[in-house]
Image (cartoon, rainbow, N blue to C red; front, side, top):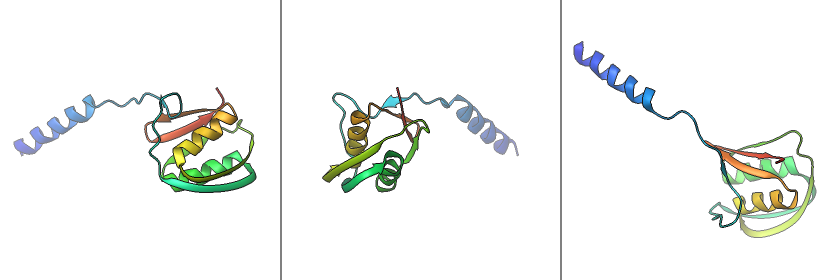
Length: 109
């Protein structure tokens, strides 16, 4: 019984000392390295929300696009990393793409 209590208290102190806050970091920008799965993408006048949902499926990641982001996208890409495609769309439409924990956030600056 004493060992179980000691083990529980050790685990509780480890969990309590673990960092719970995640800092946001930019996904795009000068010097960024793109390692996402390569995709082929051919869309015309597609809603940016739908394109980012497609990139989330291909990249197997979580993406949240702010409601105030409104844009249409026309692009044809061959064998481009999904994260490079995400950053290219953001650059054209002057959007900000950040990573917070395991979620990619797309919003206006």
